[in-house]
Image 1 (cartoon, rainbow, N blue to C red):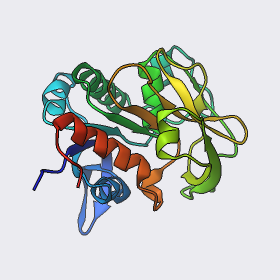
Image 2 (cartoon, rainbow, N blue to C red; image 1 turned 45 degrees about the horizontal axis):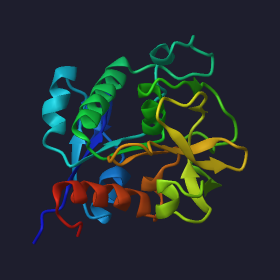
Image 3 (spheres, helix red, strand yellow; image 1 turned 30 degrees about the vertical axis):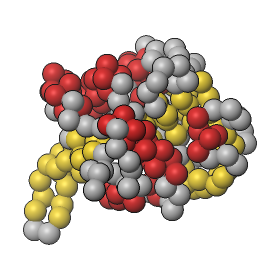
Image 4 (tube, rainbow, N blue to C red; image 1 turned 180 degrees about the vertical axis):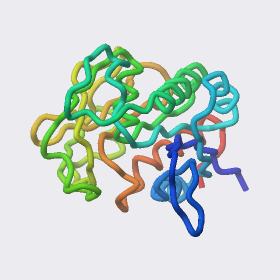
Length: 236
């Protein structure tokens, strides 16, 4: 039986987390991410922040990369002053995930960015972000839902051909698009909800919503299939 592709997923590093009798620092990620990779036919490997020079060695062992959701990207990364509404920065995570993207693109690895991950894809390509946006999340810790419409003719539209309701929780969005990226879905208010890199052979896609919070595996399955094709094996 063909081996399922190995998909790395970036994680948080939190200073103080409680479980059982323990209260310690921990690398963590909501279970929806690795479960979605598994449901889509991949093997999931969690990637906690590490020294940037480790990124190429890590990526060399992967078949695909997911840059997960999380805190706001540091505005200094795209040359902006911090707005009052912006959340606290996580420079270590920014640095690690940007290094992972460098390594993934150097190797032609399929990449999927989710929420913050999509925003970081844009920043990595030289783009900028709007630091505060209303109407795209629920109450604190509660996902909202809204409809996104894929752009015809894009890679995303080949995976999601029709408008769909998605789980969403973000207060930032893309401003100027990075070099080589095009929008591949929009919300009703015009917010860019997905981006992709149409040039080149590698699968590069970012979605602003949270597919790991829903039942639709199509976006993740597209990444897993691209990862399997790169290895010359079939996704299970």
